[in-house]
Length: 307
Figure (cartoon, helix red, strand yellow):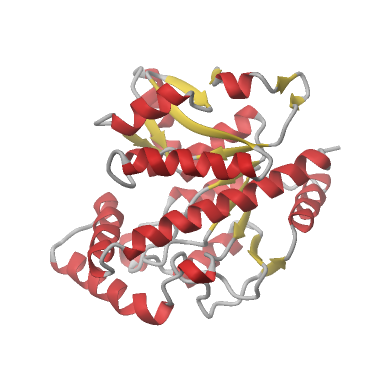
């Protein structure tokens, strides 16, 4: 796979990998998450969180058919203002590239690009998962299977709370994906610190996470690890507060016949309205928090390289 590197990433590339720890970042939060110029401000802020924590950020996107590992400042600005940018996952990533088009990478596509570039750690907001009612619709995110296929540590605030979290956990278990709650025994639920769902595994330090990764690699086990990092307490919306709003939004989506790829944008937009904007502020806070932890994990990976 031919990759294009930003000047910042190119400067630290070596024959053995990178001379500094690197954290991959997705680009759908820029093109599909919020309007300009807020999206650009958040993208810059998340990259700066990674730098402040001692690593180098690599925002990933497809620009005119080329898969970019890291975006230069001008490219980041252009992407934030671009329209009709495809939202790409495993199924359509190669097609967008072959057509010379531009695309923002989802969790799954960012994992694929990170592995191709030799980046072991990726920070995002929340992963996709099993949608409520999936027993009828079979609506399950490609992110889950990607975690079983691609050797990337994904730091997220759990699955998005609009999803069926218990079923998401069951699918991850079936795929053999280690799901590790960071610093607590319960799974976080995106906007909320806790979900009352026990975490399969727990780690309290980046070093423990990396030790687990290296042990899996020594056993020849493929696939990634999901690190469920709870949103900071000061920024969370409690499950008791946001739960009824999620149920209302789901009811409205069903009543209006909204389905397939339109469901998640509708639900997130409606919850933004119901929380009077607080859900977006919490989302921004948790992405920054995940970027900080991902940088710490990347540093530990760099200090304990794969044998």
